[in-house]
Structure formats: C-alpha cells, structure tokens
Amino acid sequence: MKIVPTLAICALALSTLFTATASAQSHSLNPVADAKKTLSPGTEAKDFQLRAIAGELSGDVQLSQVNAEGPVVVVVLRGFPGRQCPACSAQVGDIVKNADKFAAKNARVLLIYPGAKLQLGQHANDFLQGTKLPKPLTFMLDHDFQFTNAYGLRWNATNETAYPTTLVVDKSGKITYVKISETHGGRAMSNEILAAL
Image (cartoon, rainbow, N blue to C red; front, side):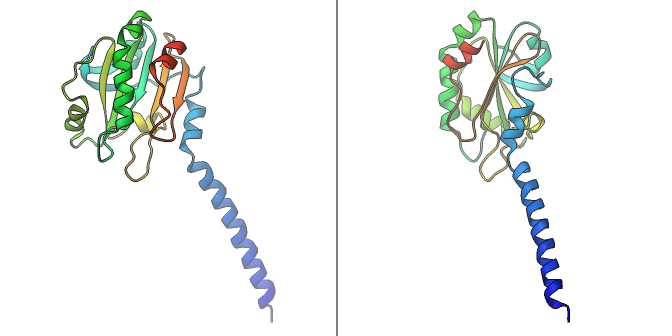
C-alpha cells in the first residue's frame, strides 16, 4: 500500500498552494502600499474629471485644466460610510481657515467626496451644511468611486469608502507630495500641505 507517500505528496502540494495563495493575498490585501508606489513623488498624476458642487469652480472640473494654472492640492475624503466623518470635517475646517494661504501660493484645493451615486449629492450637502467654501477651494463628487478606484485609494471594507489622502500636483502635472492614511486619522493638515507647495 502507498497511502503514506500519497498523503505526504498531498500535504506538500497543499502547503505549496497555501504559501502561493497567502503570498498573492498579502500583495493584493495591501492596496495602500500599491497606491504609495503609483502615487509616489515624481510620478505623473492621472488626469480626472469630476462634478463640482460647491466652492470656486463649478460643473465638470478636469485636473489637467486646473493644473495648467498652478499647483493643485487634491484631498480625498471618506464620503459617507454610514455617517459623516468627524476627521474629514476637522480636516476640511482646517483647510477652510487657511484658504487665503493656499490662494497666496496660487494653489487650488480640490476636495473629493466619494461614494455610491445614489444619495451622494444629498450626503455631500449634509456634510457641507450650507458652508460657502472660499476661493481657492472646490468640493467635488466622486460618483461610484470612479476617481478613488482609478487612483487605487478604495478602502474596500465594511463601513469604509476611501483611504483619506492628500496629494500636491505641481504645474507640470507631477506629484510632489502624498500622504495616505490607513486609518481615519493621520490626515495632512494645512501647515504640512502649505510647506509642500
């Protein structure tokens, strides 16, 4: 009977399969590491176009057109993962308070609010609570995570939407600064962003 060698071969095959699967999963389960590689300083920012609903710009806003006039700060918020995010509110509040400093550096700030298309506009309006965003800030909707997925920033877990992220894109279209948070906190605040401009 050859049961023992057969069992040993099966065990070895399963072990090899498990190791290969675990290795593939560890790579695919670390989207932040992947995003940091594709969004690293010196790389060209992918062009995108999103609908602006508040702030300086209106209608469909394209990164390359805004970027032609000067540096752009892209701030990716969490949207509405079941409730409004207090860390997002604090970050946006800090940027609003420092709007004149961004304007002095000729930088536009694009605030991106991602989520499923259904009710995204209503949730965004609730987030803004009637706040008039000063120049040079613009608030944009990322319907069905089109931007978030394209940039590799989709936080695909229960009650999550996108990894909070801040990018600075210089006039040539190159990323010069990136901060991606793997938690709800750890956001880039105005002093850090302004220093990067």
